[in-house]
Length: 286
Image 1 (cartoon, rainbow, N blue to C red):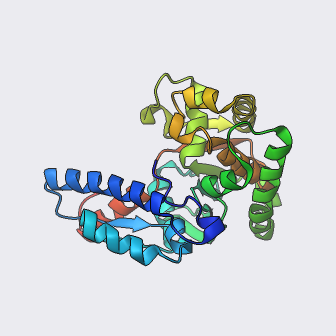
Image 2 (image 1 turned 30 degrees about the horizontal axis):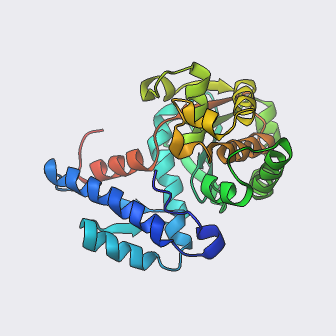
Protein backbone atom coordinates (compact mmCIF):
# COMPACT_ATOMS: atom_id res chain seq x y z
CA UNK A 1 0.00 0.00 0.00
CA UNK A 2 1.78 3.13 -1.25
CA UNK A 3 -0.66 5.90 -0.22
CA UNK A 4 0.17 8.19 -3.09
CA UNK A 5 -2.52 10.59 -1.88
CA UNK A 6 -0.99 11.07 1.57
CA UNK A 7 -1.17 14.77 2.44
CA UNK A 8 -2.78 15.82 -0.84
CA UNK A 9 -6.04 16.96 0.75
CA UNK A 10 -4.12 19.31 3.05
CA UNK A 11 -1.27 20.47 0.82
CA UNK A 12 -2.56 20.02 -2.72
CA UNK A 13 0.67 18.25 -3.66
CA UNK A 14 2.09 14.73 -3.79
CA UNK A 15 4.76 14.43 -1.13
CA UNK A 16 8.28 13.30 -1.97
CA UNK A 17 7.90 10.32 0.36
CA UNK A 18 4.62 9.22 -1.25
CA UNK A 19 6.06 9.53 -4.74
CA UNK A 20 9.17 7.58 -3.75
CA UNK A 21 7.06 4.72 -2.33
CA UNK A 22 4.85 4.64 -5.40
CA UNK A 23 7.72 4.78 -7.86
CA UNK A 24 9.42 1.88 -6.07
CA UNK A 25 6.23 -0.16 -6.43
CA UNK A 26 5.90 0.82 -10.11
CA UNK A 27 9.46 -0.34 -10.75
CA UNK A 28 8.55 -3.74 -9.32
CA UNK A 29 5.48 -3.85 -11.57
CA UNK A 30 7.55 -2.85 -14.61
CA UNK A 31 10.05 -5.65 -13.92
CA UNK A 32 7.21 -8.18 -13.77
CA UNK A 33 5.78 -6.86 -17.05
CA UNK A 34 9.17 -7.27 -18.75
CA UNK A 35 9.68 -10.74 -17.29
CA UNK A 36 6.35 -11.91 -18.65
CA UNK A 37 6.78 -10.29 -22.04
CA UNK A 38 3.70 -8.09 -21.75
CA UNK A 39 3.07 -6.17 -24.97
CA UNK A 40 -0.10 -4.29 -24.04
CA UNK A 41 -0.35 -2.17 -20.91
CA UNK A 42 -2.61 0.49 -19.48
CA UNK A 43 -1.93 2.30 -16.23
CA UNK A 44 -4.16 4.97 -14.76
CA UNK A 45 -4.05 7.48 -11.92
CA UNK A 46 -7.14 8.69 -10.09
CA UNK A 47 -8.16 11.25 -7.48
CA UNK A 48 -4.77 11.86 -5.84
CA UNK A 49 -3.35 12.90 -9.20
CA UNK A 50 -6.48 14.80 -10.17
CA UNK A 51 -6.02 16.93 -7.04
CA UNK A 52 -2.24 17.32 -6.92
CA UNK A 53 -0.57 20.36 -8.46
CA UNK A 54 2.64 18.41 -9.09
CA UNK A 55 1.15 15.28 -10.65
CA UNK A 56 2.84 16.01 -14.00
CA UNK A 57 6.20 15.68 -12.23
CA UNK A 58 5.14 12.32 -10.83
CA UNK A 59 3.98 11.05 -14.23
CA UNK A 60 7.28 12.14 -15.79
CA UNK A 61 9.24 10.32 -13.09
CA UNK A 62 7.12 7.19 -13.59
CA UNK A 63 7.96 7.23 -17.29
CA UNK A 64 11.67 7.87 -16.65
CA UNK A 65 12.29 5.56 -13.70
CA UNK A 66 9.86 2.73 -14.35
CA UNK A 67 9.31 3.12 -18.08
CA UNK A 68 5.54 3.23 -17.57
CA UNK A 69 3.20 5.73 -19.19
CA UNK A 70 0.35 6.55 -16.83
CA UNK A 71 -2.77 8.53 -17.65
CA UNK A 72 -5.01 10.50 -15.32
CA UNK A 73 -8.61 9.46 -15.80
CA UNK A 74 -11.69 11.50 -14.89
CA UNK A 75 -14.09 10.61 -12.13
CA UNK A 76 -16.64 9.75 -14.79
CA UNK A 77 -14.37 7.21 -16.44
CA UNK A 78 -13.48 5.79 -13.03
CA UNK A 79 -17.19 5.27 -12.40
CA UNK A 80 -17.74 3.59 -15.77
CA UNK A 81 -14.78 1.24 -15.30
CA UNK A 82 -16.02 0.23 -11.86
CA UNK A 83 -19.49 -0.49 -13.25
CA UNK A 84 -18.06 -2.49 -16.15
CA UNK A 85 -16.16 -4.75 -13.80
CA UNK A 86 -19.11 -5.25 -11.45
CA UNK A 87 -21.79 -5.85 -14.08
CA UNK A 88 -21.82 -9.67 -13.59
CA UNK A 89 -22.87 -9.13 -9.96
CA UNK A 90 -25.90 -6.96 -10.78
CA UNK A 91 -29.28 -8.55 -10.10
CA UNK A 92 -31.94 -8.93 -12.76
CA UNK A 93 -34.65 -8.51 -10.13
CA UNK A 94 -33.65 -4.92 -9.26
CA UNK A 95 -34.55 -1.88 -11.35
CA UNK A 96 -31.60 0.17 -10.07
CA UNK A 97 -28.33 -0.27 -8.24
CA UNK A 98 -26.17 2.02 -6.16
CA UNK A 99 -22.53 1.08 -6.66
CA UNK A 100 -19.92 2.58 -4.38
CA UNK A 101 -16.13 2.52 -4.48
CA UNK A 102 -14.37 3.91 -1.40
CA UNK A 103 -10.87 4.98 -2.39
CA UNK A 104 -7.93 6.72 -0.78
CA UNK A 105 -8.83 10.32 -1.69
CA UNK A 106 -12.34 10.03 -3.11
CA UNK A 107 -15.46 7.89 -3.04
CA UNK A 108 -17.36 7.09 -6.21
CA UNK A 109 -21.14 6.71 -6.03
CA UNK A 110 -22.75 5.40 -9.19
CA UNK A 111 -26.51 5.26 -9.73
CA UNK A 112 -27.20 2.51 -12.24
CA UNK A 113 -30.36 1.95 -14.25
CA UNK A 114 -31.09 -1.73 -14.94
CA UNK A 115 -33.32 -2.64 -17.87
CA UNK A 116 -34.16 -6.12 -19.13
CA UNK A 117 -32.27 -6.96 -22.29
CA UNK A 118 -30.02 -3.88 -22.14
CA UNK A 119 -26.59 -3.21 -20.62
CA UNK A 120 -26.60 -1.42 -17.26
CA UNK A 121 -26.57 2.36 -17.68
CA UNK A 122 -24.86 4.98 -15.55
CA UNK A 123 -27.82 7.24 -14.78
CA UNK A 124 -25.86 9.54 -12.45
CA UNK A 125 -22.63 9.57 -10.49
CA UNK A 126 -20.58 11.65 -8.11
CA UNK A 127 -17.02 11.57 -6.84
CA UNK A 128 -16.74 13.55 -3.59
CA UNK A 129 -13.20 14.20 -2.34
CA UNK A 130 -13.57 12.01 0.72
CA UNK A 131 -11.47 8.85 0.96
CA UNK A 132 -9.92 6.69 3.64
CA UNK A 133 -6.51 8.37 3.57
CA UNK A 134 -7.75 11.96 3.60
CA UNK A 135 -10.39 11.27 6.28
CA UNK A 136 -7.92 9.41 8.53
CA UNK A 137 -5.40 12.23 8.17
CA UNK A 138 -7.95 14.72 9.46
CA UNK A 139 -9.26 12.66 12.35
CA UNK A 140 -6.64 10.04 13.20
CA UNK A 141 -6.66 6.30 12.79
CA UNK A 142 -5.12 4.77 15.92
CA UNK A 143 -7.53 4.82 18.86
CA UNK A 144 -10.68 6.40 17.43
CA UNK A 145 -13.27 7.41 20.03
CA UNK A 146 -17.00 7.11 19.46
CA UNK A 147 -17.31 10.88 19.23
CA UNK A 148 -14.51 11.11 16.67
CA UNK A 149 -16.09 8.32 14.65
CA UNK A 150 -19.46 10.10 14.68
CA UNK A 151 -17.71 13.24 13.43
CA UNK A 152 -16.13 11.25 10.60
CA UNK A 153 -19.51 9.77 9.64
CA UNK A 154 -21.10 13.22 9.67
CA UNK A 155 -18.33 14.69 7.52
CA UNK A 156 -18.66 11.91 4.97
CA UNK A 157 -22.45 12.13 5.13
CA UNK A 158 -22.39 15.81 4.28
CA UNK A 159 -20.78 14.87 0.97
CA UNK A 160 -22.71 11.67 0.26
CA UNK A 161 -26.26 12.50 1.37
CA UNK A 162 -27.03 15.34 -1.09
CA UNK A 163 -26.36 13.04 -4.05
CA UNK A 164 -28.63 10.28 -2.74
CA UNK A 165 -31.33 12.78 -1.68
CA UNK A 166 -31.38 14.30 -5.16
CA UNK A 167 -32.03 10.86 -6.66
CA UNK A 168 -35.40 10.78 -4.85
CA UNK A 169 -35.37 6.99 -4.50
CA UNK A 170 -37.60 6.56 -1.44
CA UNK A 171 -40.26 4.60 -3.33
CA UNK A 172 -37.66 2.39 -5.01
CA UNK A 173 -36.09 1.60 -1.64
CA UNK A 174 -39.47 0.87 -0.08
CA UNK A 175 -40.26 -1.51 -2.92
CA UNK A 176 -36.97 -3.37 -2.58
CA UNK A 177 -35.95 -2.37 -6.11
CA UNK A 178 -32.46 -1.05 -5.28
CA UNK A 179 -29.42 -3.28 -5.10
CA UNK A 180 -26.42 -1.89 -3.22
CA UNK A 181 -23.07 -3.12 -4.44
CA UNK A 182 -19.74 -2.16 -2.94
CA UNK A 183 -16.23 -2.48 -4.25
CA UNK A 184 -13.03 -1.44 -2.45
CA UNK A 185 -10.91 -2.52 0.48
CA UNK A 186 -13.41 -1.39 3.09
CA UNK A 187 -16.32 -3.63 2.17
CA UNK A 188 -14.11 -6.57 1.19
CA UNK A 189 -12.32 -6.29 4.54
CA UNK A 190 -15.60 -6.32 6.43
CA UNK A 191 -16.68 -9.40 4.48
CA UNK A 192 -13.41 -11.14 5.33
CA UNK A 193 -13.84 -10.30 9.02
CA UNK A 194 -17.44 -11.52 9.00
CA UNK A 195 -16.37 -14.80 7.41
CA UNK A 196 -13.55 -15.21 9.93
CA UNK A 197 -11.01 -15.85 7.20
CA UNK A 198 -7.54 -16.82 8.48
CA UNK A 199 -6.22 -15.23 5.30
CA UNK A 200 -8.01 -13.03 2.80
CA UNK A 201 -9.56 -15.14 0.03
CA UNK A 202 -11.05 -13.36 -2.97
CA UNK A 203 -12.97 -16.47 -4.02
CA UNK A 204 -15.00 -16.37 -0.81
CA UNK A 205 -15.47 -12.60 -0.72
CA UNK A 206 -16.36 -11.65 -4.30
CA UNK A 207 -20.14 -11.88 -4.67
CA UNK A 208 -20.77 -12.37 -0.94
CA UNK A 209 -23.82 -10.67 0.57
CA UNK A 210 -23.66 -8.87 3.92
CA UNK A 211 -26.67 -7.63 5.82
CA UNK A 212 -26.53 -4.08 7.15
CA UNK A 213 -26.63 -5.50 10.69
CA UNK A 214 -23.62 -7.71 9.95
CA UNK A 215 -21.70 -4.73 8.58
CA UNK A 216 -22.40 -2.61 11.65
CA UNK A 217 -21.47 -5.47 13.96
CA UNK A 218 -18.02 -5.68 12.36
CA UNK A 219 -17.66 -1.88 12.46
CA UNK A 220 -18.39 -1.95 16.20
CA UNK A 221 -15.76 -4.67 16.65
CA UNK A 222 -13.17 -2.56 14.84
CA UNK A 223 -14.01 0.54 16.85
CA UNK A 224 -13.35 -1.41 20.05
CA UNK A 225 -9.84 -2.30 18.87
CA UNK A 226 -6.68 -0.21 18.92
CA UNK A 227 -4.31 0.05 15.98
CA UNK A 228 -2.23 -2.98 16.95
CA UNK A 229 -5.30 -5.17 17.30
CA UNK A 230 -6.71 -4.09 13.95
CA UNK A 231 -3.33 -4.54 12.26
CA UNK A 232 -3.17 -8.08 13.64
CA UNK A 233 -6.37 -9.04 11.82
CA UNK A 234 -5.31 -11.13 8.80
CA UNK A 235 -7.74 -9.33 6.48
CA UNK A 236 -6.40 -5.89 7.47
CA UNK A 237 -2.66 -5.87 8.25
CA UNK A 238 -0.29 -3.13 9.34
CA UNK A 239 -0.60 -1.18 6.09
CA UNK A 240 -4.32 -0.55 6.57
CA UNK A 241 -4.78 -0.65 10.33
CA UNK A 242 -5.06 3.14 10.57
CA UNK A 243 -7.35 3.79 7.60
CA UNK A 244 -9.92 1.02 7.92
CA UNK A 245 -11.94 3.02 10.48
CA UNK A 246 -12.17 5.94 8.05
CA UNK A 247 -13.48 3.52 5.43
CA UNK A 248 -16.07 2.26 7.89
CA UNK A 249 -17.20 5.84 8.54
CA UNK A 250 -17.71 6.48 4.82
CA UNK A 251 -19.59 3.19 4.47
CA UNK A 252 -21.75 4.09 7.47
CA UNK A 253 -22.55 7.43 5.83
CA UNK A 254 -23.59 5.66 2.62
CA UNK A 255 -25.86 3.27 4.53
CA UNK A 256 -27.40 6.19 6.43
CA UNK A 257 -28.15 7.99 3.18
CA UNK A 258 -29.42 4.89 1.38
CA UNK A 259 -30.83 2.46 3.97
CA UNK A 260 -30.89 -1.03 2.48
CA UNK A 261 -31.11 -4.45 4.08
CA UNK A 262 -27.98 -5.85 2.47
CA UNK A 263 -24.86 -4.99 0.49
CA UNK A 264 -23.29 -7.20 -2.15
CA UNK A 265 -19.49 -7.33 -2.08
CA UNK A 266 -17.33 -7.02 -5.19
CA UNK A 267 -13.62 -7.77 -5.19
CA UNK A 268 -13.18 -6.19 -8.58
CA UNK A 269 -12.81 -2.63 -9.84
CA UNK A 270 -10.74 -0.43 -12.13
CA UNK A 271 -8.24 -3.13 -13.05
CA UNK A 272 -10.91 -5.55 -14.23
CA UNK A 273 -12.80 -2.75 -15.98
CA UNK A 274 -9.66 -1.77 -17.89
CA UNK A 275 -8.95 -5.38 -18.86
CA UNK A 276 -12.47 -5.81 -20.22
CA UNK A 277 -12.15 -2.60 -22.24
CA UNK A 278 -8.80 -3.66 -23.69
CA UNK A 279 -10.20 -7.07 -24.61
CA UNK A 280 -13.12 -5.46 -26.41
CA UNK A 281 -10.77 -3.12 -28.25
CA UNK A 282 -8.86 -6.17 -29.48
CA UNK A 283 -12.06 -8.02 -30.43
CA UNK A 284 -11.36 -10.76 -27.92
CA UNK A 285 -14.20 -12.94 -26.73
CA UNK A 286 -15.43 -12.14 -23.21
